[in-house]
Amino acid sequence: MLRRGTGYGIFTAAHGLAWLVGSTAIGALYSHSITAVTAFVVAAQILAFALFIPARGRSAPMRSPRVGNGFGPGPATAARSAKAKHRAAQRCLKRLWAVMRADEVRRANASRTHLPPTRQEPA
Image (cartoon, rainbow, N blue to C red; front, side, top):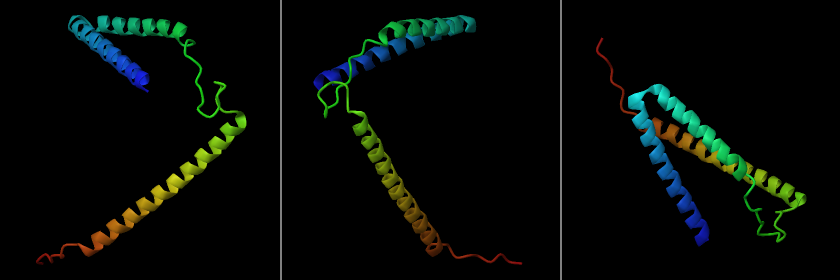
């Protein structure tokens, strides 16, 4: 777990530094020309895409904690898991609906009992 946290920290630090450098460059170019900003942003996107293509196939296969073969759960387990997730989502939505309805009723009752006295305008 420590290595994963360190990896996320390093990634976030590198992302933040790259963001700072890019924003500084865009700010400097903005005072020069909008066209220069557009050219810089397009070039950065093309470079990022060019670096992404070779790196996308290098990730290690994910391992499932239940199945030790490294290929994850089988199709039957995945189907059961999807059904279980669907049922859990339905239960969650039912609870959310009940809470929202109870809150709506509570607000309606509160607005009826705490209305200020109405004033009659002189005619």
